[in-house]
Every structure is written in C-alpha cells, then in structure tokens.
Length: 129
Image 1 (tube, rainbow, N blue to C red):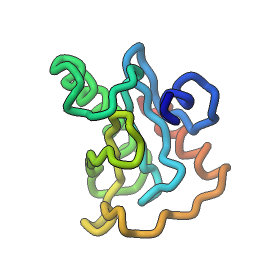
Image 2 (cartoon, helix red, strand yellow):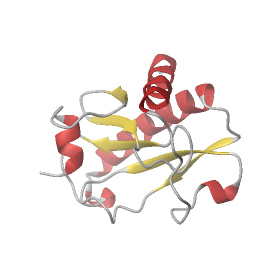
Image 3 (cartoon, rainbow, N blue to C red):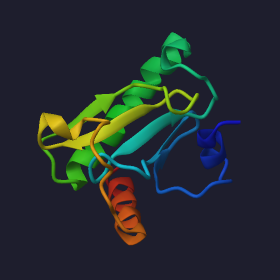
C-alpha cells in the first residue's frame, strides 16, 4: 500500500482539498509554492498513463476543478501542471500555483509553511470547489 493510499484511507493525516468517489486532492507537504496540491486516483495505479483512458480523462477534469479553486484562492498568474511519478508509485498530478516559470522546479527548496497556514490554504481551496 502506498503512502497516498494511506492518506486516502485516513491512516496518515493530510490537508485535504477535494474528494469525490474516484479522486482525492491534498496539499503537498513539501510544496514548491504556497497551494501546491496533489491529485491522485483512489485506485492504486503506479503510472498515470496506465490508468484506463476514461479514468484519466475524468482525473484531468477533476484536476481542472481543483486548479480553478486554487487560482481563485492563491495569488498566482497560472496553475502549472507536472507529472513525474517517480517518488511515489501511485499515479498523481502536481498542481502548482505559478507567478514565474521557475516556480515549477523540483530543484527548488520546499516553501516553509506552518501547519496553520497549510490548514488555512486547504480550507480556502476546498471552499472554492
């Protein structure tokens, strides 16, 4: 079982942003920028492009809804999208609020945010869904 499945199952706490019957979105605990969110399918699949085509399409629609809510609540010019999938063997999409292209670099040090800030961001994004 992956760490993301444990988060989805409530075994590991998270800053949940959104959820439906197939997908789950939560703040990345090592964010590139304030509001960096992960979108994952509830079914444990290692590689994003191994998902059935219809599920991948639905995941992108869900990710779009989350991105719109992020843009409405986190000051940014755009919400960037990244798919790497190397660090956790569970398909996921990174949604990263951007003000400049370099904001979407996995080489940058994570942004330091307090648990109160993280909870506030998650709550604001969730309310905008």
